[in-house]
Amino acid sequence: MSNDHSHAPNLYAKGLLCNAAAGAAAGCISATFVCPLDVIKTRLQVHGTPDVANGNVKGSLIVGSLGQIYQKEGLRGMYRGLAPTVLALLPNWAIYFTIYEQLKRMLSDDENHRLSVGANMAAASGAGAATTIVTNPFWVVKTRLQVRFFLSSD
Image (cartoon, rainbow, N blue to C red; front, side):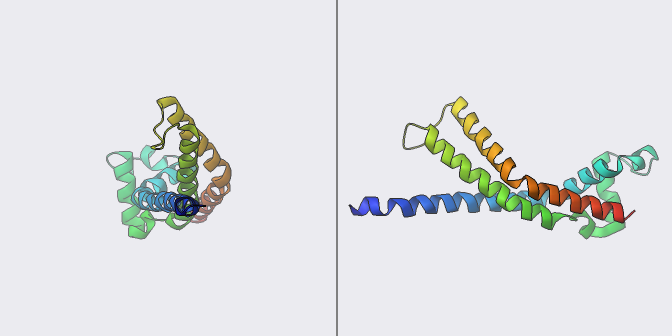
């Protein structure tokens, strides 16, 4: 076996690990930025929009809700549920990007892994399906934790 081929599995594994780490990091960063919106979304799903009907939220629903949460609960309230979200997103994006790169490799004919639009859609769909199947239990736990907190705080 030549030197070039003996290092190929190590480079391949390193590439998989890099894709998983990049996906996990991207998920954590995006979760941190959108967490306040996720808090609003979850509360609206659980409680509906009674504050809007009563006129307690001024301005747009999002801005008014953010202001209300910040006023009542501070910055901590805006980031409620971030820990379970990050715990769910770490495997979510790590799996997605890893599977996506694997499918791109399988579906491409050249070494640069360039794909047609259809093949790219197939790779993304396959990665999304695999991710959903594997990580759905994490999202169920996250939602139940958020709902239990919100319902117990009423």
